[in-house]
Length: 57
Image 1: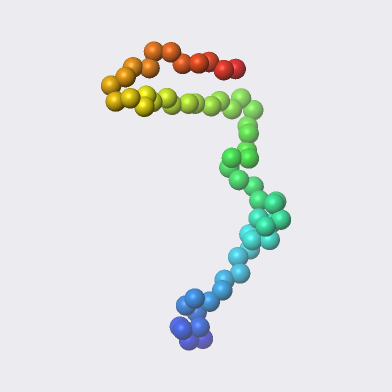
Image 2: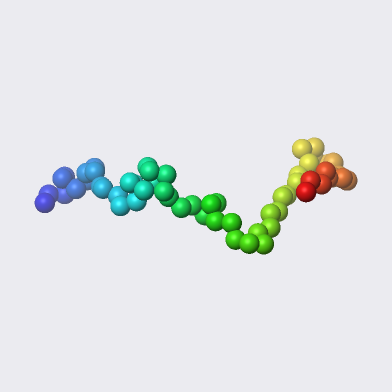
């Protein structure tokens, strides 16, 4: 097979059918028990101080 036939040729990927069918598994879908979340808050003002944060359950 000549190099010109390989460059730019279509490559059949194994994972395509299950991703198109919605059966793909992503890291964000995994929720282990006891999972915690973190939120980082920055001020939109250059020299401001964040003094209070609203707490939501």
